[in-house]
Image: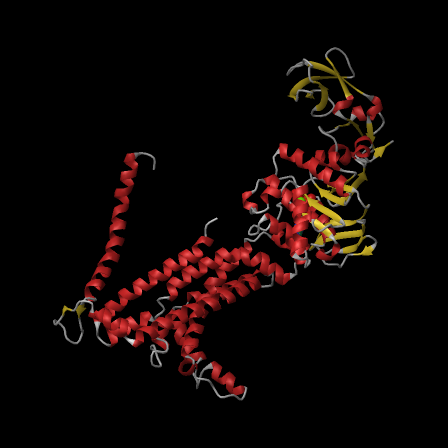
Length: 290
Length: 334
Ligand SMILES: Nc1ncnc2c1ncn2[C@@H]1O[C@H](COP(=O)(O)OP(=O)(O)OP(=O)(O)O)[C@@H](O)[C@H]1O
Ligand SMILES: [Mg+2]
C-alpha cells in the first residue's frame, strides 16, 4: 500500500467491517452502562427510573460480591496451575517417540472439541454422581463411602471439569513449543553433565517460558468468564461456594430480575477484567518480546 | 590423556548400515580430521565417540578403558556443535559456566575458570551478553569456551566453521590450531572442506559411505592417495583422473595428474587442447582445457601472468614423475 490513493481506498474498503464491529461492541456496552444507572426490575415493567449509582453501591457491598471475587480468582488460578503443570507433563510424554503417536495425540486433543455444557453434564452425571457415578462405584469397590463431589468439594469439582477442558489447549501449545527446541541444545547439556531432570529445568523449561506465557494470557481471558459449567452443575452453590463474577451477574439480573444491578455488576466485571489484563500484560507480557 | 580407539565399531539405523565395522586409533594429543562428502557418516561417527548415539556393534575405548556403554557426560569428552547449541536464555558467562555448575564447583572456582577461558578466547567484554547479541564468530568462541572449561581429555568438533563467512573461517581455523598447540589435547574435527582438513590436521581420515578410505598425514594423502576416491577428494583443484586409451598407454586403468604438475605451453607439449574457462586468482590461474580427447576437461595451474584466452590452443605436458596410477579397482599402483 504505497500510494495515497491506495491507502484511502483501503480505508474505505475496510470501514464497513470496522464500523460493524464497533457498533457491535459500543451498542451493548452503552446500553449496559445506561441500564446500570436505572432501577430496572423485570417484575415491574415500565417503572424504570433514574437511580444514580445506587446499583453500584448495592452490588459492591453485597457479601456475595466478595465471595464471587474470591471464587473467580481461585477458579482461574486453580485451572491455570493444573493445565500448565499437566500440559507440560503431557507434552513431554507426547514428544517421546512411541507407537500410535498420531492416534494418541488426536485423543488428547479431543476434549477441547466437546462443548462446555456437554462435558460438564458428563462429569456431573457419569463421573461425580454419588449414586451412579463412576467415581462412586470405584469408591464402593474399594470399600469406601462414595464421595459427593459437587456437594462437598464444589469448587474443586468445577476446577477439575474446567481443567479437563483446557488441558488439551495447553498441551497442544506446549507440545509445539517443545518440538521447536533444538535437540543439539539438549545433547550439549547432556555432554555438559546435566542429568535428565536438570536438562528439563535448565534447558526445556526456559525454552517453554514464552509458550507458557501465551497459555496463561489466553486461558485467563476465557477462564474469567466460565459460566456454562457452573450453571449445569452447581448453580453457583451450595450457597455462593461456586458463584464467580459471571454467574453473580447472571443471578442478579435473571434470577433476581434486577437488570439494573446486573448491569452494574457487568460493568464492574469489565473493569476488573481489564485490570487483570493490564496486570498480566505488564507482568509477563515482556516475556513475549525478544 | 585422550587416546581413543574404535574397535569394529558399526552403526545401523534400522536396516540401513550407515557405518560398517571400522577400526581407528586416535593418539593422545593428535589433531584428527574426518573428511568426506555429505552424508558419508562423519557426524554419526563423531556422535558415536561422544556417546550421543549407541553403537550397533564393536567397542569404543578411551585411554584403554571400555567406554562403549558409558554415558556421554562421563566420557570426559567435550563437543562443539555445528549450530553451536548455546543456551539462548543464559548469558555468555552462564553458558560457559554451565558444565562447571553441573559438576558442582563452587561459585569462585566457576568464576575463575570462566574468566580464564574468556581471556583465552577474547570474550571478556561479552560475558554478560546473551548468545542472541553475539556475532557468529563470537558464538563459536563461546561454544569452544564451554568445551575448554571442562578440561576434557579430547575435543570433538562437528563442522564448527561451516556457518561462518570465508574470512572469519580462515581466522577461526588459525585460532583452533593455536588452541590445539597450547592445550595439546586430542581434537577430533569433522569437516567436508578439504582445505580445512589439509591445513589443520595431524592426521586425516577420509570417509566414503561410512568406510575409511585412507588414514594419513595431509602430505601423505596428497602425495600417495591410496585410491581414486582419495585422489579426487584431496587437493584443490581436484586431481585430473584420466581413463581410456591414454591410461592404457601407461598400462593401467586410470592415471591421475594434479593441475599443478602439468606444464602449459602455447607451442608444444604432450597433449593438445583448447582453453575453456579460466579462473584468475592473481597468484595462480586455473585453466580448464577442453577438447583434449582425454576427459571432459583437464584442469591445469599456471602462473598469474600467463597470457592465454578462451579458445586459444594450448599444449599440456604432464610431469611423468608426479603421475599417479590406479588399477581397475581404483587402487593405487606404485
Ligand atoms: N537418526 C537417523 N536415522 C536414520 N538415518 C540417519 C540418522 N542420522 C543419520 N542418518 C543417515 O546416516 C548417514 C550419515 O549421516 P551423517 O549425518 O553422519 O552424515 P555427514 O557425513 O555428517 O554429512 P554432512 O557432511 O552433510 O553433515 C546419512 O545417509 C543419513 O541419512
Ligand atoms: Mg554432519
